[in-house]
Image 1 (cartoon, rainbow, N blue to C red):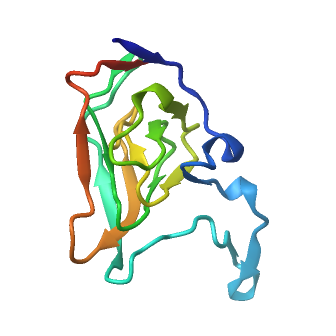
Image 2 (image 1 turned 135 degrees about the vertical axis):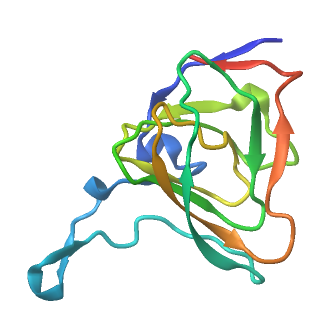
Length: 163
């Protein structure tokens, strides 16, 4: 069975079951450092199990995708959340399914970041690995520590295309 998803704009309400939209326009800035800096505070809920620690990473996508796009796989991180924030204005594709032993392919949802928005996937949320529409760098915050925190589900035998 071939599945086709239509990517829709990334909004906090639409994405809420899967995680947080990271967008500084959603909060009022706090002036700090004598008024020389704006802090956009508490933009996502970072989740870690008791044995983990936060990792701050930069991911650089080396291949840009275009739509329509056939999904190669989905992954989930059962022991902690994972956040992606573009460092430049860079649109990227977000495909998600609610947590479970495997992704429910009949309930996948697709979103397009506007290039300034990031996402924070809740622990266990199935999601597409980084899929930028342009080459860019992303700040990634996720969990380090013991245990397997990355499970992959191949879509080779289950074609899903996003338009």
